[in-house]
Image (cartoon, rainbow, N blue to C red; front, side, top):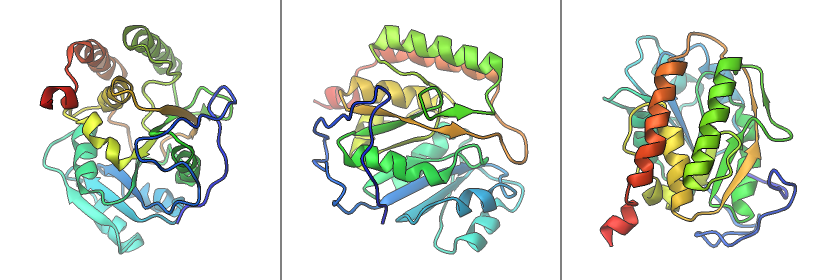
Amino acid sequence: MISSTRTTDVGGQPRLRPSITGRTTIEDPVRVSVIIPTLNEAENLPHVLSRLPKVHEVIVVDGHSTDDTVEVARRLRPDVVVVDEQRRGKGAALAAGFAAATGDIIVMLDADGSADGAEIPRFVEALLYGADFAKGTRFAHGGGSIDITPIRRAGNLALSGLTNRVHGTRYTDLCYGYNAFWTRCLPALDVDCDGFEVETLINIRIQRAGLNVVEVPSFEFGRLHGSSNLRAVRDGFRVLGTIFRERQRVPAEAAAA
């Protein structure tokens, strides 16, 4: 069980608008599912898993690692749920993890050690106080990063500004992947991409669905071991394409209706 205290948005004012779940008090018991996409992260998992608070389940979605990532996960956490994803890419891994989750709340967590699992209660409390989606940001008071390069920072700032202009959002950190949301929000996400543009896709679709988004300050550390699969220019163009494609997209609920 995750306990929490009151949280506020980046402007310092609590947002207590009704959520689609109806849960707005910290007394409500919640089950938290943590989704961790992995690809050759055996060296990082001991740190990542040790930082987690007590949660309902941990789901490791593995993209055919060639090291002993899965074995390490099972040794460290015998109750881990392992999903073998046939497709490559972070988007595909997250979609598979979402489908396997059985909790009330889903947390997206990277496996490279850059995101601190000890911050999870901060995200959960935002949801318990009325948010539908708790979006991590490195660029609000209390957040930060020792990993982001000047080029990536500038690109993220430009893409965040473009998204805010095109989609009417007010995001300070479009491309950060540390997020949490109520499982009932999954139909609005309808993740159908494979790559690193998945965070942009999710952030836009959540806003277009009219859900209550609260930004949560988060501190990003550097990758502990191994090399990143992120390619700033290539993935930046994928994010750019997603921003404009989503402008023309009919939300899943509207299409079904």
